[in-house]
Every structure is written in structure tokens, then in C-alpha cells.
Length: 280
Length: 233
Image (tube, each protein chain N blue to C red):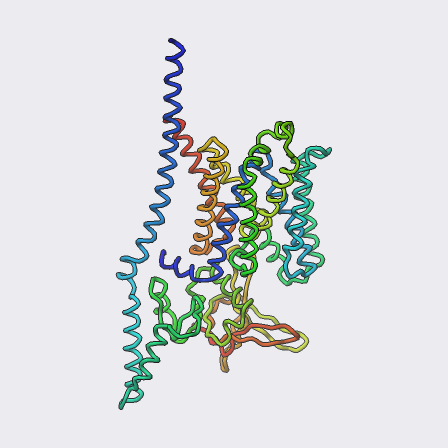
């Protein structure tokens, strides 16, 4: 099996998948802790459906690089959801649900009415479940993912203290004179970028798992923000790598295999936490 | 005094809790490292040497095979130049960049997968898709269709089901070998044209096709095809 794995690793598209998969897992887990603590766990799902709608428009417009349209639309939606969600009549969870199903419905409708593709169900399935799209990346996609991941990680490290503050006590941050809204905006933009990147890996229906599971697993074992973030990042990368390699070896769908590994890791963390509590 | 006694065990309990967590974390990290190390050690060790031939064994076998062929054909003299060429081909050290999944004149690569190839494929297959997992096959075919220039002239062997399409305007009928991805919602296929004298199979029939990869242009679109293809029983 190991020999087979090394053999498969010679394929350029497998190398691309591993690089991009690890980077996406790392980025999504970093912001996952903040999102879970801010009660925005489901925002990944909502934004990914927005991205699905944007992909539908891009494919109908026959854009050579759909990222040019998908990224701005997702960023705008993220800003609308995170910044104005609390001040409007429609509150956060309802706004997410509304945008989520609305974008999904319009996306499928547009694809159905205007798409020239001969395999509509295949296109929809690929976008929703990732299918093997992570294994069909071109070098340009890989470089784009690397660039965006570097930007996300750098921003997270640079503004770590501010993100920590805005996660736990937004009002205190505002009272202390910091621009809480600005940092919320930054988080919204980063989340949108991560969602668009992660669609290649697991598809739009399974993105939430990449954001939520590593953070929740880490929270079973650790208490401080820093340790939860670090463990979440490590666990996410290990799970993504295990999922990708398992799917390649066993011939299973990549996205759902990664999520299954995340679920198993969460179960293990719960078990370890329970054992620790009983022995303490 | 009583307060102190009450606090003491609490502190110890807390410390135990955290030290236990640290131990569990260290155990988890240790296990992960061990798994990776164990994986690395098995790959280069007994598995290869006991079950499958090594690189040198394979090269020697190939050279010997080439030598015997040359002897049979030209019983007089075997030129040293020809021997060198044969050994270069067998080692795959030519200037042409090797595509993964490619076998150079049937020369196998070391490892478990190679034994399958040697057992199941005939000589002269360049890209054997039948040895790959379903996820890999789908991705490889996608790569071939998106970068056909890299595979032009290569001998491809693939397994899938037959799908056909008839152009009502021209009356031409096209047959393709279709491969589904792991989610079974997407399919990739390559058209094949059988060499003379062979009957085309019925739709949805599982087939193994071997043919030369080539492209042609029709109505402004470039299509991939396996020409001079033959079906395996």
C-alpha cells in the first residue's frame, strides 16, 4: 500500500491536490475557532452556497477563470452577513439561511436554464460535493491557492490579538477605542477567501465541516484560545492529508472522505476528553 | 486552616488534569510520528525485496530478454550499440520525460503495482489506466483530455463501459470508453476506433480497450480518440 501511495504521489495532479488540500485545511481551521466562538458556525455553509450561485453565473457567462467573479460576490455576501447582520431586522441566523437557500436555488436555476453543458447533473454534483475537482487542478490554480493562503495566514498572525479581542468581547474592544467593525470586516473577507478556496477541496455542501470540526475537536481537549487554534490547525492538516491519501488509495470521493476523517477525529477527541475528565 | 485544606486538593486535581492532558497530547503527537515513521520504514524494506523484483533484477531481466530476442533474430552478431539502446530503454533513462503511469516498452517500475502490470499487460503499453484506483483513473483521464499534446502517440489501455453517439446529420457513429468518478455523478470518456475486422460492443458493456492516443479536429473542436484500438476479451 505504501509503495502504491508513493507511486501515486509521482502524479503532478496528486502533488497539487496535497499542497492545496493542506493549505486550505490550515486556513479554514485558523478562522474556524473564531467563527465557532462568535456563533457563526453555519456561515461557511451560507457563503459556500453563495459561491455556488456565483459559479453558476460564471459558467453561464463562460468566464475562463470563474474565481474573478466568485471571489468578489462571496466577499460582499460575507461582509453583508457579518457586518450588518446584527443591525438589521433580519438577524444573523435567518440572514444566513435566507442567503444560503436563495443562492443555491438561483444557482441551480441559472445552470438549468442557460448552461450549455451536456452534463448538467455532473457539473452540479462537482460543485456541491467537490467530486474530484481537487485532483483536476491546474498549476495556475495551485499558485493562486498558495498566494491566497499565504495572505490569509499572514493576516491571521499579524492581527492575532485583535481577532482574539473581537472574538470574545466586541463591545469591550469598541469601548477601548479599537475599530471592531474594521476587524469584523477583515474576518469576513478572510472567511470568504477560505470558502472560495475550499470549494475545490470538499465542495460547497461540505465546507462547514472543514471550518467547524477541527475547532470543536480542539475545544474538547484545550481551553485557551491559542492552544485551541494551534491544535485545530494541526488536526485539520492531518485529517485533510489522511482524507486525500485515503480517497486516492481506496477510490472514494475526496471531499466526503476528508469530512469523514474529521468526524472520526472529533469522536476520538471527545473520547480522550471524557477519559481525562473521569481520571481527573 | 480549613480553607487551606479545601483548596489544596482542588489545586492538585487541577494540576493532575492539566498534566494528564499534556500527556494525552504528547501521546497523540507521538502516535502520529510513529505512524509516519512506520510507513516510511516498510516502504523501502522487506515488502519490496520479498514480494516484488528490485530495480536491478528487473533491468537484468529486461537486458537478458532483449539479448535473447536479438540472438534469435540475428544469430550471427549482436551489436554492442543495440545492447546499449535496449538497456537504456529498459531503464527508462531516455531524454524524454516519463509520464507517471507510463511503462517504457513494458519495462516495469519497482514495487507492488509493477507486479500487477507485468502480469496483466502486454508489452508496448505506455499508459495503463487499469492499474489505478477509480479516483486516480478519473483524474488521469481528465489530465489526458485537457493536455492531449502530452499523450499524442502513446499506447493507452483503459477499462470502462461503452457509450455510443450517432450524429444524425453525418450518420457517423462514435464509440467511447466511459469512466465514472467515485461519486458516480461525473464521467470522463475517450472515444475509440477499433481496428479493421472487429465488431463494436453494445452500449453499457464493460470493456478493456487498448489503442493509440491521437486527436482530430471536427467543427472547430479538438477530440481525443484511441485509434487502431482492440478490445480485450
